[in-house]
Image 1 (cartoon, one colour):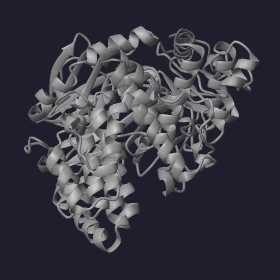
Image 2: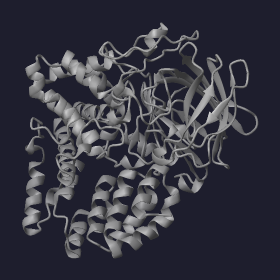
Image 3: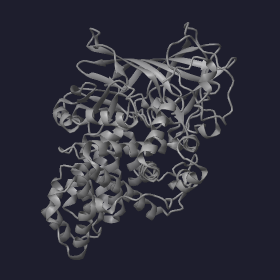
Length: 634
């Protein structure tokens, strides 16, 4: 970590960016806060933001907000530190539905502002343009809309405890502009602090370090203070509030959850301190201080979100045997790949997710052993093959880097192909060389944005030994071209030899493996995901009876079973699917099950409509938007 004191340094990226055009020097106010550089090179221009950071940028955000659970609104003020070119007349922020009451400078002087035309498509919102008139600090008094897409307000009935309401945010990719007025781009890193008031007895956590004990305000409310003194991309500002308790795991790790969930959550994530140690041994110091987690109510739309110092987790990963803890390893790995070095534009999100998926697998290997790591890698590779078989090897969206507006093919490319790119490099040139390169990548680009071209340039400079080796590794083909390069290092077929033999036997004569109950979760998933998809009611009933699939405690396995049952119009699966979809809001599970129902036409569509009429309001906006496109809801 290094501080950049000179104004010019704020516009300089790492030394690998020697080809970029340097922007003019910027004026800076006196501050000890770390300020990250921005990239001005063409491949770092973010099409998802209205901001013009090369003219004027936000370096720090100070929030003073009140949570109103009755109105389902956040309101208060945001103070922004601005760094601008000499003579800059305005700064442009991102807004999506924010209701602005007043904007002043640091001396309380009113500033003129304008909210531009709203673009609803893609959630881009509208530009908030503020006349600077020399201001280096802005105070924006505002409130977020009641339907802010980043925020989900849960009634007591939607929580495990059933007594108190709950709030959580999900900012990635560009949702935080619905509740925070700032430049909402991953390439414009900002430090931040917050004072949040909430009704007693609710606790508040954020993705910053809590400052002391909450202050009792004497009016039935308490104030909580947080600081994030390291510059982060704005999507990583996160909040949760509810009836939650904390339980320590290690000296710098612990977990928050509702009281009814806490013990189960704590047991499930008990290996977290070991994971942090393993990650540090691989790629250097953990730079964020604490690593805490919060297990949220089941409507949280993702498996996990890597918010610094407070990873957000879905309760659906709790299986009782730590078999889904690759999720924890993944979110922890983001503390290096994603949070420390961040994609400057969303078209390069593989820099976060693909590198993290590789790093996750290395943590799993260190903590749980090589066999489990190899099996989980094999499941990842199968996802790539399935996707490419469906869309074709030449589908443009199958490149790791994609152009603005191009279709994305989802996690099989961004996560899994990125994982196997890193894995192929490691296995080809050797782990020692690869690890040394990746460690220096994190060190030399810490708290900075990056692009696909940047990592490619870094590989040429610091990884490969010669142009011939660069060509043999097919670096450009992996990053910028569709499909799967021929030099991919495939997973060891022995990883699932027993399971694959059982799949063949079941396919041939319907014999159900007696060893199933002793298999790992990855082995069970491999079996269910590879048996023939067209099954009769009798065959499905036999599977369920022998393997206890309807009562699976692992939601990954239960999902595969429900998907198989619904695609075969298996009526006994419908009540369980209805129960599952009413309790779980994780998009990974919810969207595919509604898609399967919808694809089943006159049988499945009435079921989908009936279930969605009951569950839609309980889903986060991220999940709801995906299912709306399937069910064609009004």
